Length: 237
Image 1 (cartoon, rainbow, N blue to C red):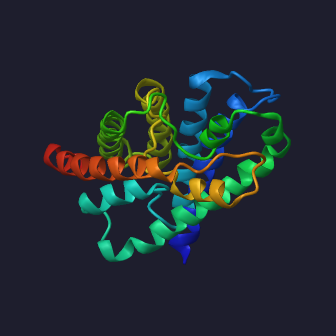
Image 2: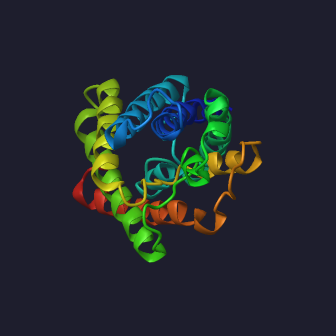
Image 3: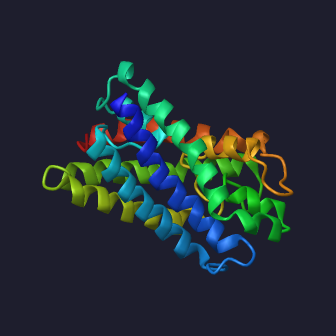
């Protein structure tokens, strides 16, 4: 139960900051309107750093992301039998995060006419929809991120877990800003928030685009497997 709560809380730090930053930059009449991609990247990075710290303090390894949990299993850092509370906490945390973002910006949903923009506040929407290329972009971006996570863990975590968490958050900001412009980098984290978009009474919303939803989940999972294998061979794990 401790791991479940830890991952739930940590995931909420990541997703409320991340999708909240997107909502602030995209929704009409928001003071953060047109804040830009750097603002979004910083929100995701800071949210990740704080999410890792919160989850680790409560009592988990601080994955706050199902695809990272997969990478830790493949990397031999988490037994498969202990993975269920990680996945459950991350998904429930995602659904609650969607609720938070909806409530935080409640008047702005009605003020925003673009239904696609509203969806981007809960789920990944590619800038140019080309499913094979979107899959490749998601794979490459998350592959780079995971190898970097293991490298940071090997170099910094033994010295300072806090510095390692913050460096991982900064690394996410760099990855989002540099590699996320095509797909927004799903990184396997938007399943819970997409469910929230499906069930919440968001004013004049579109469908939740479940036909695309597998891409930002499947591509990071495949990337996590490959990145973990490579990281083990490089001695990062």
